[in-house]
Length: 280
Image: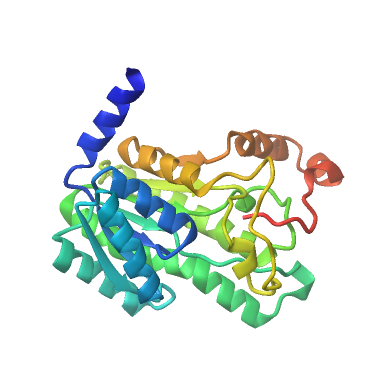
């Protein structure tokens, strides 16, 4: 009975809310879109591939979305992100939540990184979210309320997958920008929430799509891998009950605490390294 009441409350709370999701054409972004659609949200879906966005939008409408607007967007271009904001306002009337979800991995150790690797990885994972934060926060400051959710990574906190080096660095920088924005806004704009979402391993094609990964890289699987649906549910709950940070896997929080309690000891223990195993 309590679960039914909680679900009903979530659906009622979502009525009238519009959510912008970048990287919405596949993976976690698509999963978030499907979950929010089932809750009756209006959606503004952004990614580069129009055909895939149209498919996700059609599914969202079938699942119960109040609206599903498609805006093809290259989030590494500031002008595209500004246009996404403008299209969201013009076609959906407004937006209440902005989720910076787009990103891309890389399979390179630190000593193998090139200038191009750094430029591409930071553009996809850091600058894209910076643009999203700036355009959405500016809009929310005028309205006086809103919610920004940045999808970063547990790997931004603990170096257990060193083959993701540049990705980990970009996500660590995004964690820092997210925290700084949250502190900047908290006094004058207490109703603008800023959340750092840190997934661990998720059952997507993230590893396959990473720069430098073989095209036959398998979808993540195993006991520590979360489903896209599990991540999407956490996002839905975070929208209704905003928090500053959330590790999607409870084990990640415990591991982060162990790491910072004894950095040298943690790094010296090979049991704490995933080596070449894939990680988000």
